[in-house]
Length: 124
View (cartoon, helix red, strand yellow):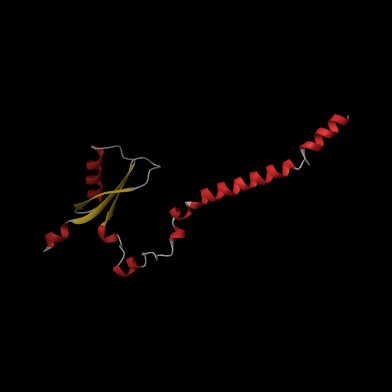
């Protein structure tokens, strides 16, 4: 029975550069955290450039319970929270801008702005 407790499960995360996000890579068995880090380094140094490696004991990671997962489900009437729900805004904004341009154009036909300037120039 003591042999079962000798190795512990560790989850390995890495990042390619200092600005890159941490990404999950794999699990490994190791007797302690230091050896888990050495094993993770040996595995990654051969494959790709790495800026940082994290090893986390699996028992230190808390996952959600079934009841907690139920709270993540969205109601059907919450589409406005998703960005895809705002797809119509570009078309609506374009219509609004077009209406504004039409109104400005119509106002300029009245001769109040440009026509008055031309009359004063011709009289001078």
